[in-house]
Length: 66
Figure 1 (cartoon, rainbow, N blue to C red):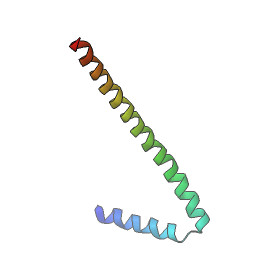
Figure 2 (figure 1 turned 180 degrees about the horizontal axis):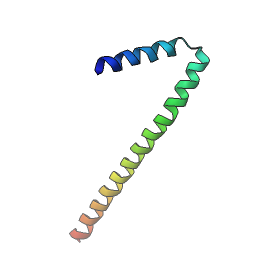
Figure 3 (figure 1 turned 120 degrees about the vertical axis):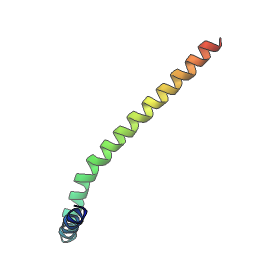
Figure 4 (figure 1 turned 90 degrees about the vertical axis):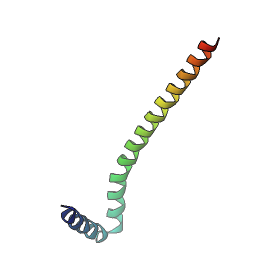
C-alpha cells in the first residue's frame, strides 16, 4: 500500500515539475491558499475558545475568592 502511494506521488511530482512555471504557481496557490486559510481558521477558533475558557475560569476564581 505504501509503495503504491509513493509511486503515485512520484508521478504527480514528475508531472508538476514538467509544467510551465506559471502553471506551477497557479496550481500551488490554488491548492495551498484554501488549505492555509482553512488551517488558519481552525487555529483561530481553537485559540479563541481557549482564551475564552481561561478568562471564564479566572473570573470564576475571582468571584469565588470575594
